[in-house]
Length: 510
Image (cartoon, helix red, strand yellow):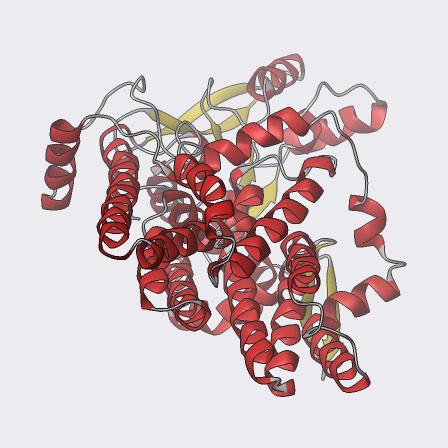
């Protein structure tokens, strides 16, 4: 938790709190500008939730991440209740422990750059409320389930993937319970429209731009996305992305008690870059025919159909579905599928089944914990990877020591948003990387570059060579600055906890 610095997309939700026009679409209510959509597919729900939090808790890694962790914890609690109502305490215990120790679920939720934390909460809540409606016929539960689904859609349009999978699976498994009647349709529609109203209002007023901009399909990305799904399931997807590999220079020795315990466990157990969930899913699928006449069959088929429908949409959607924060939108359905198989096995085979189920559960949970420890061990020893660098903390402190009147230029992607949030929009900060992201070719691009280079007294902030977010941006910037007659005067080099250079601050002088 404390090691990675804040990342650009992780704090995107907070931009409207500190920058006028920080949201793509805002509504004017009572003279106030209220953010509605951050992007055409990303709503401002998280902005609304965090506004009072960041008002009273200064923006930092802790104030951004601990609420996300709490949301993940709430999801786990609701998932426990869902499995308890669906099958019983054995399935609830196994499924909850599998989900709570899953590194992909925990880390994508805690760092929430997707974002995914609320996506999991809304999906799991809709499942639990939908099950209550299925068992009792409660229209209130149906309306609340639809309301959660609407909030999920507003939070992020990609919620349509798991939501459509759940709807299709529900109709396929229990057609009588979900047979439409006037009261059911009106209740579900009203709940959904209330939850998704900001999203729907935005799209109606903007000619359904969300669907026009993101509704393109291709089969060419299928193999890559299957690999992402596999690596998200086995817990290896974040190595090299969030967590540095062991080839990273300047490893640190364990310092805190927790780091020493983690290192000792790693030394004793060895590397565990993957867990055993893919084998558990395959084994549960093999068991399904043998459990066909048990009460676990409908729920297992439901999870299987919902996952298949949701993932197939990811697989064919162009330029989406190809990262961990996409694949993990299927969660908690994989854990539900495995937990039901293990719990039913323990009941079907009596004593032998109970022993086998206990052994399987312990092995899977231990595999998850070892994989999670591998992430923590590498994070503590080798540091975070890429733009998750913990040097952002030192960068923020260094900028704080300069005059508030100093104009700062963010010379690469991933700097502007972070400093804006950490300093609550008080910095005189501009985006300075636009014209240099590619080689300026038109007179307008060259003119824009020259205007930025000539900003009086500007302090430029960028990643050091080799860590650029836009490949070659430092070289293009240096070349244009030299051609315009400028030279760099270095002010500071910011290093991470492993003493690796990360950022450089400089001024341009004639």
